[in-house]
Length: 176
Image 1 (cartoon, one colour):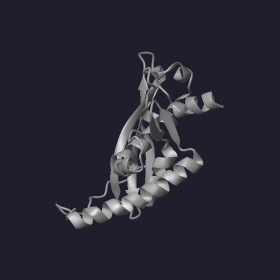
Image 2 (tube, helix red, strand yellow):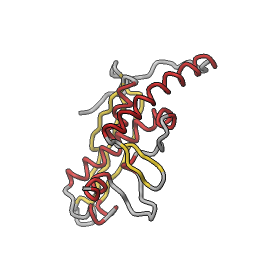
Image 3 (tube, rainbow, N blue to C red):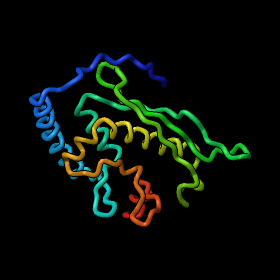
Image 4 (cartoon, rainbow, N blue to C red):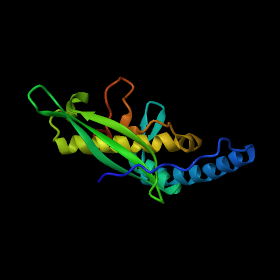
């Protein structure tokens, strides 16, 4: 699926202090609701002393603002022998009118960790798309996540305290 980029309508050059205060109040209420959902559904991962949101939490927050996210694989990275060793994906944040409001690109490669060395290209593609979706939503809504008390870096992008990758799938598997 390919989205056409829609020209955005002109944004006001300045938000008044009263409008900003209203936006922060509304975001605070949404942050409180998000916290309840995240806790009830276990949509956060603790890395060190910080909590990072899983992709589903980012999607939930996007929905609170009338946005959804779409993604597509944009490239397969190959080694010298032509074997797929990574995938690049792009995600777009779309509002209820179909207007693209933001986006991000992400990569997932087999050499990130031992757990990825034997992954199929489709698995790498899914991880790249998940990362791109979380990143695109983060770029728009990280300020609300901070109001909710979470670290704004999506869990899919995090590394453990010792520097090794901590993909969500591996963390869930380790906790089981």
